[in-house]
Length: 196
Image (tube, rainbow, N blue to C red; front, side, top):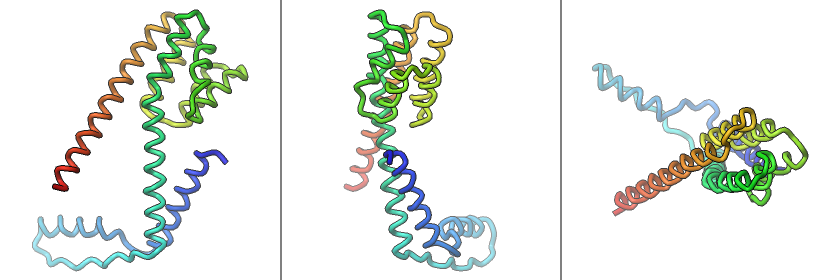
C-alpha cells in the first residue's frame, strides 16, 4: 500500500474511534462556551454542563488522529521546502537546452518525495506534461505546489521565456519557506518564554 493510503486509512480509523467513544455525548466545550456567552449577556441562571467521558477509544482515536495529522503536515512542509530546489534544477536544464518535459523529468528523477518521483515516472512514460503536473499537484495539494504547477502548465501551453518565469516562482517560494521558518522560530521562542 502507498504511504498516502496508509495515512488516509489511519486517519479514518482515528475518526471512527473518536466517533464511537463520543457517541451520544454533546460537545461540552462549545456548549460551555455558548452558555458563558449567554450568561455574560443575560441574567438567566446557568445550568452545569455534563462532564465529558474519556474512554480508551476516545483517547486512542484522538492520539492516532493527532499523530497522523502531524506526520502529514510535516510531509507537506518538507515537500514545499524542496520545491525551490526542484524548480532551480528545471531552470538549469532549460538553460542548458532541454525541452520543458525533459527538464521537469530530469529534475524530478532523483527526488525521494513519492509524488515527485511519480511525476518523473509519468513523464518518462510520455504522459503529457500538463496532465502529469496536475496529478502531481493533486497528490499533495499546497499553495506552493499550486503556484509551481500553474507556472509549469502555463509554460507548457504558452511557451516563451520559461526559465525567467520559473526563476520568479522559485524566488517567491524561497521567500515563503523563509517566512515559515521564521514563524516557527518565533512560535518556539514564545513557547519557551511561556514555560519559564
